[in-house]
Amino acid sequence: MWSDLEHKKRCQVNKINWSKVKCNHIMGLKSFVVARAEINSMKDLKALYTSGESSMTIDEIIDAILHKKSGYLKGLGHGPKLDTTRATHRRATELEDSLKKLKEEAATIQHNLQK
Image (cartoon, rainbow, N blue to C red):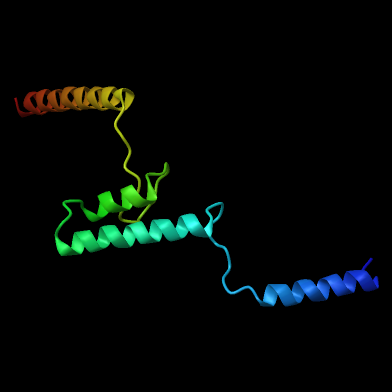
């Protein structure tokens, strides 16, 4: 196969075609058209923001253009904002209650030690 003349011709044609590629596709599944549309809408919103016509913050503009994605970006300023759910709210309430109880117990122990 590797020594086949037809294969060598095809390889040469592929090499020439790849050398003609001007930009590599690094957008994953997103097409160039979609990427260009996102860039254009980002530029439009940025122009509105800098001219003072828009009341949106930079974070809101980023969310509007790039959409929220799940995950955690450690150490990278702007990232996905997690919506609070009932379960997390309930857990936060439980933790606040237990903290309050522990503070009361610590205060009573401190009071008993001072006697």
